[in-house]
Length: 110
Length: 116
Image (cartoon, rainbow over all chains, first blue to last red; front, top):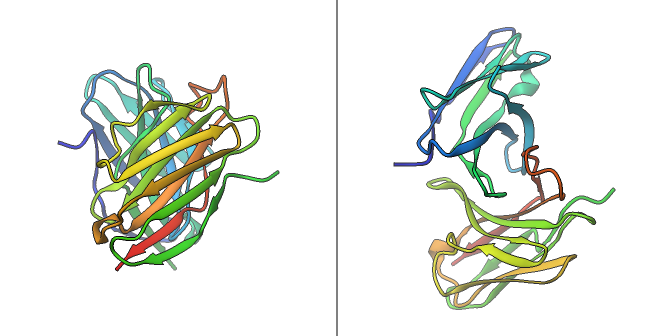
């Protein structure tokens, strides 16, 4: 079983739509949680951290459910520029390295 | 400011040849990570260094892979001999001290390796 599991998609949505991605992690020792974004043939970049109380950054909202070992990302009012792969990322206690999910691909269409 | 610099950006080689990938982390960063990305397996951690010392190399596939960090500004990942299944994008990333909780790894643009 993979440590971090995501639906690979693709999610094809029209501009302006709201879309949600989910992710589950298997190791209860996971301590920190993040969403990274990766554009086609580019490097991953941090999109946002995920806090226990949930957090919002503009059109993006991240939620964490430790009991269910589940993380989500909600994107409101999708833009064409949101088209990318979204990587769910966890860090285990005592490790600096991050464990990445395989990513969910989003394609926003005009 | 310069980001993480990797070279070469693209490498095509034949099976059995030695491949050396290079990385210059962001100045002041004390952790360096090598990841490999393929369609089938996604992003996998190969090895990471903290203050130039290898901390976790459990992701290194086999003895054909080796990594070094002789100083704070340079690291290499070597594959000898290379095999077609090593074809992937190899990313180097670095992170700053004191940011253990921030989660921000800064990635280079990657080295795309094709082994024929």
